[in-house]
Length: 489
Image (cartoon, rainbow, N blue to C red; front, side, top):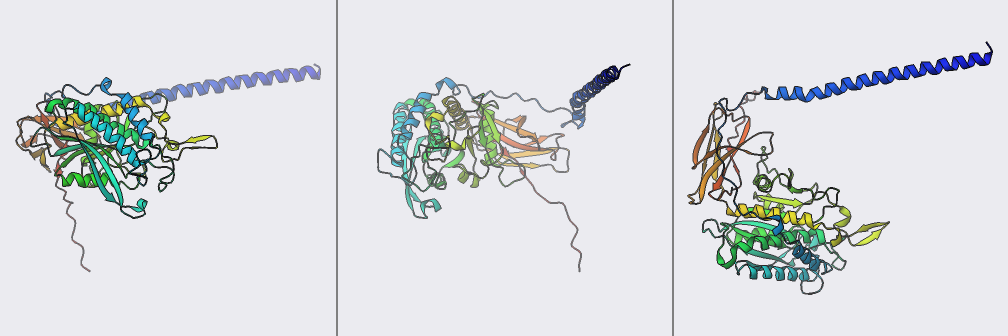
């Protein structure tokens, strides 16, 4: 055989061997992939079979209480007026800047211009409410590092919807946005700072809530048992000055804060698939079971509005940042923050400009009014039901350690509109409460066969109208285990 033919034959044999090896490798890979897929598909089945191996609590089955329906006549999404929200934001942006250090007396430019826009809109709504809505301009002085440590004049604007129940009228639920804005340099009162999203959007939500909820109070027939305050505060960018003063003002007026909803940066939702859920921030507090008043307010809002609209974030605020709910939270009061799903930092805290092809500035064109309208509806629904509810229970306590039963006790004032109380429980690792049992009156209830070790417990009041108070977690006796006495030297 010629050498060339031998070379061709050897080359063909080599190619054939390589093809066979590749097929073997492919076949082996396919077998391995199928085997791996089968193993993965079996894992959930194993996990599901393993999950119920914990003993049932209680062993004889938990009660199945009949729950009252939530109040009728909830705030409907079509009732939200996006056009009026857009018009309000446009007028605020037209003020050029609303930095707290800018002019309070110039009607065309500065923070005084923003105040005038808000007062005018609140007055329109108050007129339509049959004068039940009371508009207040609260003037005060405050200082911080961002005022060069000098006392500065500030003003907050409130619209107050008084409660109809004499026992609950001094309980106040607050919704707030801040109407001051800032450019890149927070000390520059001359630079443009349109502040469309941060935080004309939050102001628009607060004002729209006033319109939605005050309509039910026309001709003096108020339906809300507690008082609702719709706020637009100043001084946020200079150090939460307006909200800190609002807290003190509420105390001076003799109010007890039942809950504070802060709406800050709630106007943009530009990611694909919008509208998305709004983020709801709440702090843990200083206790180890994450049941601070603020966390309970967040749980109540999510339950009222639904998981499809609320994304609970278990931290007090965005990482390294703060908002107007913070002074209330630090005072131990129920306070949460609403913020859009994904912030664009090019469009907040920036003087409008273009650099290297990137546009900066907090402008109206970046807003999503469908999303903002959803946030307004969520706030209004929560305020409506919380202000209709009975007062929360007090002195909620848990006993029964080293016994087979959990014992819950609580107190409550007499209330002709109360239907009773829901006893709540949850696994210590679960984020949400479930109703365990219904009690017609306060006192002590024994949960037979329920471990005090494996669950947290709470109680909330339920009105005959179906409105629920914020849950009150049971206080736990915190005794460390006995330790040996230190040895003597």
